[in-house]
Image 1 (tube, rainbow, N blue to C red):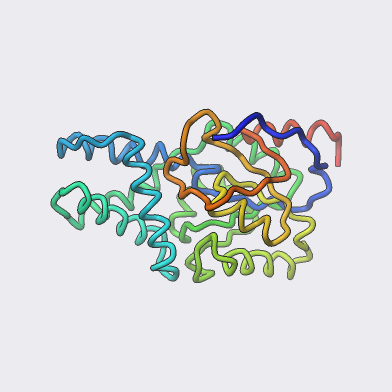
Image 2: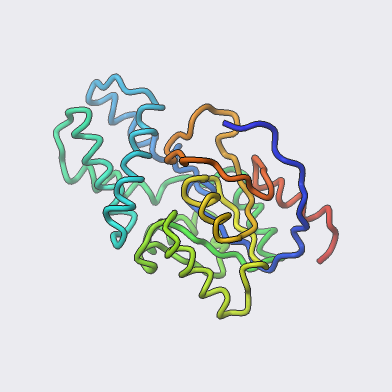
Length: 249
């Protein structure tokens, strides 16, 4: 999906806060999605590849984040399941949609996330800016070791990224706590949800390319045009290493 990471060209010690996308950046939602949908597809005898399933999820997510801006993430996941069942001619059962939404609580952390967040939390205010709802984020945060000092969720903002309202909600709150946007470093894997809109708002960005060794965009909607981040990394450990290279703050 991309070439080699760009050389580090920013001083991470110049920032007071790290803001994170969570789903796809810290929590491996593609593994979580496939852990549910693989057996579902086998049970119903579907000729659907993993790529098919992930891209169908991405299409549904992009649709319902616009159509249902005030609905929680779990409701969006239920609506995505309804579309999956319709598109693959599987009888729809509300309990199956509920089970798909409930599976969010078991989506795993990326292997590098917990240790890296524990280190970064010693040096920064850590904030989640996520399209997840409060209930979903609570489960994800527990999986990640409860690293966040602040949490900004779509159900509170009444909007989903990439909508500017989601970012304004979080950035305004951080500014009220004495952290202006030029002291914020935004870390995310989604060009569509995060890097493109964050760059448009003048934020310094780190693109954590979780799919750097895979083709396509997977379960993340494709951007109309990708934005160049200030830094590209393929693991969160690289950000820890960069911070350590600048010595004590």
